[in-house]
Image 1 (tube, helix red, strand yellow):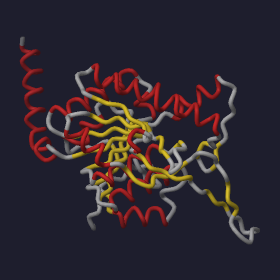
Image 2 (cartoon, one colour):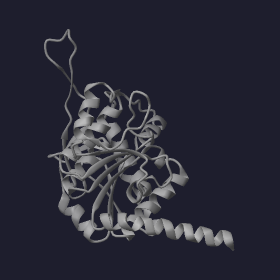
Image 3 (tube, rainbow, N blue to C red):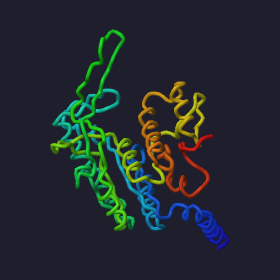
Length: 300
């Protein structure tokens, strides 16, 4: 009985401490990019779905953008279609694009929608082709070495970048108490499909909606300094300096640039969050103890 009472008291204390944070974010839009380990562990998948449903239940408006690179890679391998990458981007010919649409728009998207709905949510799955949600254009990749007189243009197929987001559709869904779950497939002016990096789509969605927060779930603890310590509470100026001195490099650069551009475009703050931590989203929103790196536009 004493243990039960102590557990109940702890629960009450947690809920009481969360109240100021709930008040702060009620009615606000939060864009969450979901991917990596959080999509593979059954425990983390369940925790993610419950977190999203709880956010909606207390008056916060979550919008989910998901990845699915490993799932795409697995199916391509089973179909004996070889994958090639240039600067971290999957070269996407017509055959590969068919697989991308099948996996992202079908398998992964619908499994996330079903997961959220099975925990009491009201999620609806979309790709960027629905009502031209994500208008896109072909991404141009150039490469230059000191020996070249001019940059080389590399064709990586149906890989795109975001031109615009149909905010009318998203606002209609959010106001109707739906939770949009978006697969990062864009549509070009002639109806062609484009494979787009999920982080970039999440950033552009957050910017278009002028979201309170952009939250990027990752497989690491956050942005680290050269000694391996997680950095947080960064201004955009500090992030620029970390890029310039080489602290931010390689695969983390695109993610950080996405977070940075979102904040510069009017998003309240961007967060690089450790998706391996159970209930990482709730910890970041409802407590002072974060589990990642926060970037905001405030000067320090």
